[in-house]
Image 1: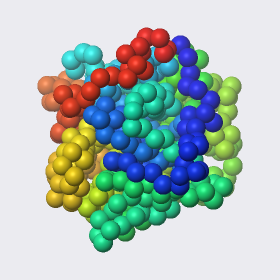
Image 2: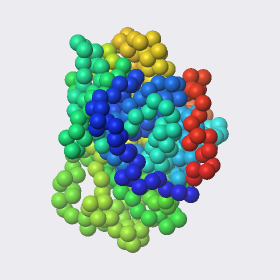
Image 3: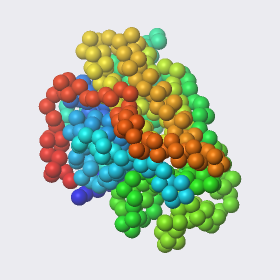
Image 4: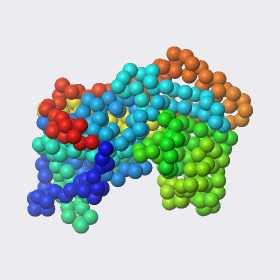
Length: 439
């Protein structure tokens, strides 16, 4: 088993760009996260030239989401990168559990689903992105622009025709493309420069503070929600033998809590998770180890324009409940792939040509927003004894009936279980044919 390469070698510079100063390509993808890299690999394998713009020079994703649902796993399996990414280190999880004061209320068992995607997968993003990037590098038509920050969109009237990118040293590069794809996350600069409203709503009452602890071989093998009288904590295994802990707090309360210092925080966490209290004593987290996730929902006003497409968090942002972020991003990429291929082959990148992607995926994102709002109230919301009893009865019904199977499949694959159009892919790059040698 090997880990990913050094972070500072993931996105090497492109020496010729300093001399030419301009690049022409078919598609320019902004952002090398799961959606951007998966889409880039699909397009390259379909014979499309792609320039990938990424402001960082390394795959630094330590506190990014890492739980991949079966729907996303299937996309990665279709692309031939899942096994190699897992070989770098991953934790299969049997499902979701909800506990109230250490008593099991809800047990959603993913082993009910058909193999091979019959688990949740905690996969560090650097492992996934490394394999996707390795596949891209071995295909013709790929240009990696690491360390370049998007500074402007090029336009011809209303149509987007490319980007202007800038390095830290002030060097500017122009990339002219038939389509620009914004895959640069919840605070998308592509979306902002296009003047598209993010559609942010404060749909959740909680923020989440994340950190990790050495598990000492005691990881639960599930994604668990531990409910207490004071709130809820999310716990799951992660590689290598770590516990990832998400502490839910009232929205916008973190600064006040952090001002009290780390000792009260450690005491509260130990009381909320007494089974891991010794780990908090042996490996006490420092304040700097706690990373705040601002939890909100967003649905961009437009996902496509002439020459422009938004995918993943750039188009729609979700909370962490239900582990849907990467799942939706990878399925977006699979849905966008044939639409973009058609646009490039026909020479028509108009909004009308790109719109089928938005029409297919926008209802899916809206359905997840609705589901997450209900889940947040049911799993994370506070309440008295009556509310707790009602939650217990509802959880028992889901756990013991066929309703649980239907809910599990819906959460695992979504309302639109997208698969990769493998009929549109050409020969696999060597990196994907020899996954056994890459571990």
